[in-house]
Image: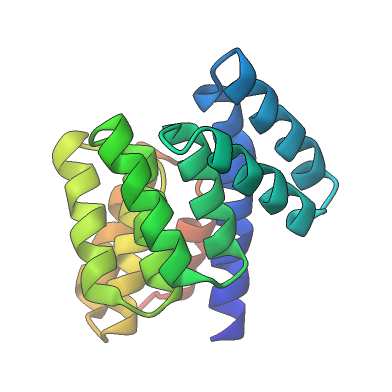
Length: 176
């Protein structure tokens, strides 16, 4: 269990760093996000969270800040807080697949598998494929003991994303 949570936290962390390049606006909101990301990249998560939280007091309707703050809350294990801010980011930005995937990851870490599955399927309804979505669906199915469905999702991930080492590990270790 600890290993799965560690992998999920690592992936969420990597996703947050990668997504920073795509979701930043210029101006004050972008400056706030940049300042928080400097802390984040140094492993100063509490400081990064504080910058995003302060930014939200000034710009409560900034979807980027709600997204970032929600994600870091999930990484730090505050799933109720993460849900609140990620849902707010979705309200503000619209049905954005990256935000929805982060919400699903928060649910997955909180062992709310039905909610995570619903969100991941909503991502796939928007886009036939989105990075790691099939992998995480496979993880849910594996946790439920639905090994055939899990394997199908891992293979589907690899069909679109052959560089997904986590999906490769699942497929190669499950050679029944």
